[in-house]
Image (cartoon, rainbow, N blue to C red; front, side):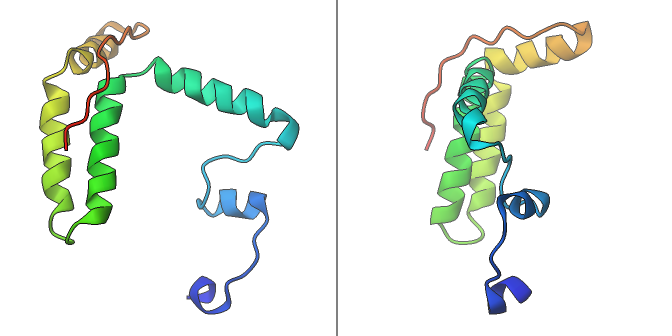
Length: 107
């Protein structure tokens, strides 16, 4: 309520501590941190990331009861990918993943 009524100014560190931003880095480390995150995402299950992203974005654009439909579709489609199977094997075999699928839109 305080935020809504008073609109306090927050430092980057406060915003991070309160969970309003994911990570704060010094300006001189920003490019390296951004590239590291991009590399991490590129090595992940990009098709499943795409399903998740589509579900979240469409969830913002529809009536309140509809986002669950998109989440359910994304969940079901994710389970049908090679990358989901790879994730399961990685967990059981305790090894690094090798994801292969390319992203595609679902909604």
